[in-house]
Length: 121
Image (cartoon, rainbow, N blue to C red):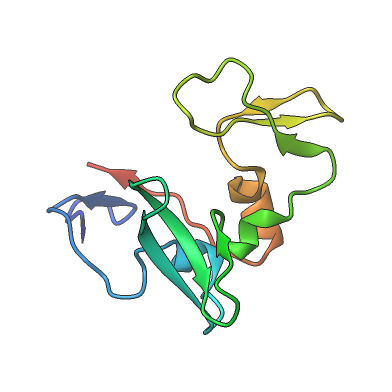
């Protein structure tokens, strides 16, 4: 991305890029503990998917540790989702969301993540 020469609140997308250490959500979720690593392949089911292996115990997590504990009232709710993606339900408000509740703007700000809004042109 490059700042617009006309308006500094706008950015022009130049193309994709690779940034070492930011491919697994670290910029928003924080670094993984040193004993955890990301894997992409599950030999048992012969399928590709992201997971985290604990090198000390061999345990496998399918969610980043920052996503495992949801705020009060939220739970996984897949009713009506046939494509295997997650949906979340808040029993306090009745809200249903495709976005993990820990990734909402309010939840990220509450965790101290600095967010900025800008326009892509």
